[in-house]
Length: 434
Image 1 (cartoon, helix red, strand yellow):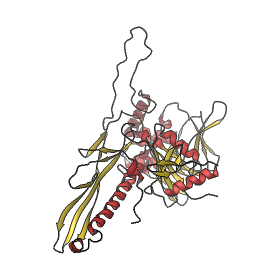
Image 2 (spheres, rainbow, N blue to C red):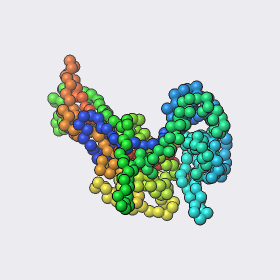
Image 3 (cartoon, rainbow, N blue to C red):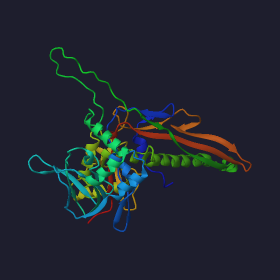
Image 4 (tube, one colour):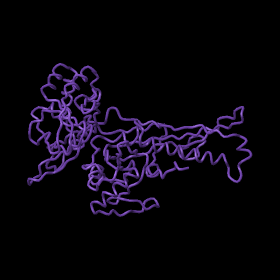
C-alpha cells in the first residue's frame, strides 16, 4: 500500500488523555487584535478586496453590516508600484491603510548607527495601517518598501473618517481599539500581573490577579470512521497462509491513521495550519526557503523548539538553498532514523502539508508538550473494542448476503496551548531557481 507514510506528526505529538471528550485551554486574557490575511478578486489586472474579508482587519473585526463593508471596500484605490518604491516611511504620519493584492513588501527600521534592519516580508493578502489610521497622532514605526512589482489597495484617513463618523459600530470599534492599546499588558499582549520588587522599608504591595480569557477554547475529539465489509466465505475459507480479515483490517487502520494525520494538519477547526497565530506567520524574503528564513522561524518559537515539519519537496528546496549559500547542515539521529536538521532541530517530512498549484508550500515549527505549553495531541483510550490507542473495531452485523461488517473508528484532535507554541513559514517556493 503506497499510501502508508512515516506519519512523523503522529509519532512526535505528546498525546493527552481526554476523559470527557473535551479539552479546555485556559489562557491569560489577551488584548491582541484580529489581524489576518485578506482576499481579493480580480478582473485582469484590476483588483478588488472582498468586502467580508475586511473583517480580517482589526478595525473592521466583528462588523456585520454588509453595506458598510461594501462601501469601505469600494473606497480602496489601486496603485501599481515598482521594486524599490516606498509605501510608508518611518517617522512620517500614518494616514493610510495598505492592502497588498500582489507582490512582496519588505518592512525595515533604521538601525542605531545608520544601518537598516529588516523586520519582515509581506506578500499577497498582507496589510498594515489599520490600527495606526485610527490612533491619534500616530506615525509609521517602520519603512515599507516594494521588493518586487507590487499591486496595493489603499484607503486614506479622510474617506475612512467619513465612514467612522456615519457608523456607530465603527465608532465603538475605534473606542475599543484605543482602550485595548491603553490597557496594562506585557510584551505578549496578555493582561499584566502587577508585581513589586526591590523593596525597602514597608511599602504597600500592589494588589493583582491573573485575568483569564472569559471564553476559553474547548477542543472536542473528532472522529474518522469507515465500515469494513468482509465476505464470510473469505473469512471462513481463505485465511491461510494469511488471515484475510486481519490484512483487510490492517490496511483499513493504516488508511484511517493517514486521514487522522491529514486532519491534524489541515482541518479548519483544529488543524495546525489553520491555528497558527497571525503574529507567528512569516514569509520568505526571496520566495525560496533559505537558511535565513529558517532562522527567523526559529525566532518565532524561540523557547524549546522541538521539530520542523515540511513537505519532502520543501525539504529538498531548502537543501538546494543551503547548497547555494555554501551551508551544509548536519543530519541527526531522531527516533532511530537519520533525518536532516537545522540548528540541531530535526526537519521531518510530512506530505500532508500540501503543495499548491502555484508550487508553494509551508513549513511548521512546533514546541511540544503540556509542560512546555506547546502543541499536544488529544485522544481517549480505553474505549470499547479498542485495538490501538484511540482506535476501535466494533462488530456490526452479518447481512443476508453473508457480508460481515465492522465499524472502524479513530478519535483524535490537537491543541495549541499558547500562540508561540507554533510558527509557520508561509508560501515558500519549492521549484528550483536559476
